[in-house]
Image 1 (cartoon, rainbow, N blue to C red):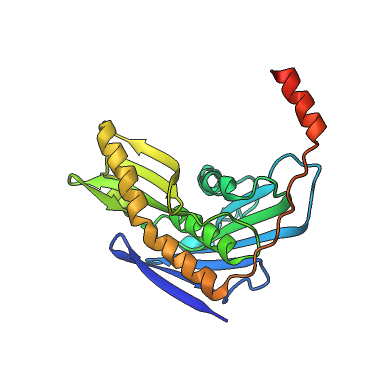
Image 2: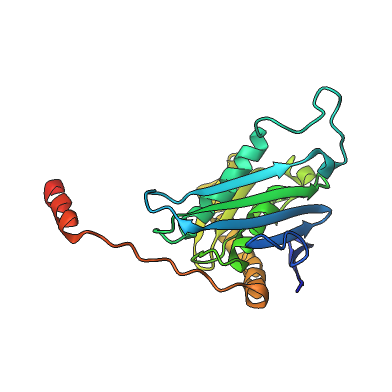
Length: 250
């Protein structure tokens, strides 16, 4: 079964597709914006690691030469080695808003990979990767409390611009990436050039408003293709130990 849903964001169409690629993954979503295409996949181990005290979540964001129509030269024939600074920063953009949405006691190794398949050098793949990662988790059996969406906000000609192109960003006084759920903003990242606190707050609130259609798309995908979520066993707390710790900390 394949599903394709399009939504207009920032005057351009963003398309979410699932069921076509990476079918063996727990969840996979192909996101297209302009000529930029990102494939996001999510998988998670069936067995939990109870000895861990944190969520073993790994985020990978990969940009390939072929995405921009380039072929590596003779010296760098293969794309190996450490990730670029852009890839590392984008991984953090994906990780920060997603990690708090998992159940606190979820201890299964989980991996989310966003791969740039095509880049038009105008629409930044990072926003597609963030939305695709959330969508892939949403339709998978991996327990995620609620979906997350993200947009970039620029400021040109005294007005906010949603998902500005690279050429627009060159003359924008603001480059703000905002991620949020249906009811709250969960992450803000970016740069601002001499703008007031009120304008920044307005930008964040505006971003939360315009990202709602992206959450609608993820909800529609989940209803059409979503798998039943795994049950997460509740954490059993040793009551005697808890009381002893509280008494020592008092």
